[in-house]
Length: 293
Image (cartoon, rainbow, N blue to C red; front, top):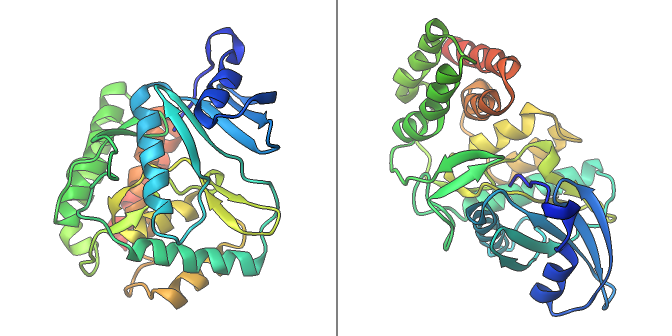
């Protein structure tokens, strides 16, 4: 979920934290934008965020609860939501280790195995019109992953990037060829997995004991290789240990490494829409790699 500065430089965060937790706020420390930490009178520390829209806060809260319900990966507890405001527990900061990374891989595999009703299924109480970062994300359920991925994850952002001039009309044909060939490129059919949905390195926090915690989900039903591909897109501490732990818990289908560019195509196009031409070029490179793989 993307936060925006609150009117008056964050005024209201302490009041929101008090109202939603039932504890008096003792101190506040701004972090970035409309993100801040508030110390409560019981000594606990919460993170207070203000989203662009109430729908974004609702989607994040629903996603955190859906992930937490599995008892697999660690996520901060939702302390309350009100309009565009969301209050969660703070994750104490620490550093990753190889052992913690392998444990995170096993936990992530267990999360995915909890499943979802369909590809694109939103969490219970989550909106159909959600967000990934600040980009709209429509959670429209589908039963066939290749056609769903093309229609609801790749093509909407390709069209937006073309309309914005970030991807040229002639270049769009490469991505469209990937979509046309998805049935043969997608690998063996898999059931819908329960995804974090925006699993880049910045959304994986490591606590003081070395455990991994996941924040800012765009939770949905999807293909488990998409979470793994996004984790590889911007790097992750001890990544190979994460992947080894995952595969020991839940082996991946043959050729999964060759399909990484295919699954990275969606987040790269989202980034192209949000951040411009540099990511468009990466998305086109991923499309060419998917076709070659």
